[in-house]
Image 1 (cartoon, rainbow, N blue to C red):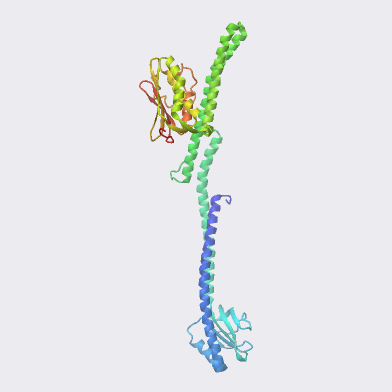
Image 2: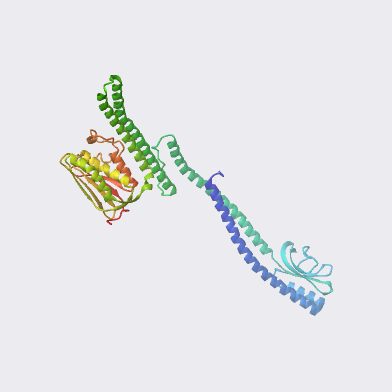
Length: 452
């Protein structure tokens, strides 16, 4: 129980409450007590000085009569008077004996006196008069002692009750916390056990635990997506690499078995090199995607003129488009963005490469750069077969290839890389119908600047 942070916190707050209450009550008592002490001392000194002056003026018989009259006529039952002989034997007064705690020396004392068969606390002033007489004047302060004891008892019981309430609240709070934390622990245990479909229950109260549960559930969903992505990528890699590797092995095995002359060997070697280049391209694309996903490439961000990037890509692909009889138009407005120029060039190049690859001869490709208050857009339009609406959400998955692209060369990483580059730059890839064909838009957010 004492290892519970909630219980320790509740007890700490209870102790703080008791300590602060004690300080407050103590300060009030000290201020009030000091004021009352000054008032009592002033009254005692006034009475004592008056009787001492009378003793010098009227002598011992007059003093005895004055003390007797004060005892008889005083309506203040707190006043204390005692006149004693040199042996401290009482002569007249309202207490029966000289207090044991008051010495023979003159001065102020606080002592216990017996009054009406009860022992009370009193504050006293001792005067030594001529002829060795002793005069004791004071006031009963037993009510102050009772108040002080009542305050002390109240603090003691209040502190005990506060600690008990704090302990009870800590136990209740601990149970509530344990219930919510246990649910989070179960979800974590499920992750350790490999079950990523469990989620932390949300109570619906909107408190911090619900916020934490929501964050953890988002984390679990993201982990599940990543693991599914890794599993899918692994399967896709195994599937896509198995065919070229098998073809390469079969081709080399055929060369070893038949051992043809060199002029017949070179074409087979060229085909093998093409298969190996294809494999290397797959791995290079995966490595580039891994760099992008880890945000390592953010270190290469700089101010880039998006128009220059688009024009350089257009110059690279325009000859290939013209070789297929495709008209190629480029309209690039100058727009400055923050980004990695090589990644932006590769992403735009992938969009243009797909357009050139799938657009039929005699059609047209248009590349444009626009900007507004929201950001910049690079739009690539072609007149190819396009992408069905059902496949648009899937084509950015790694190694996914739609029905229209299965016969075309490629491994299904082009749009995945474009999507990753867009996400790295805080943007997105939008795919829409061009009727006919596809309109692919690379959107970069509002960190852009307009024309220079």
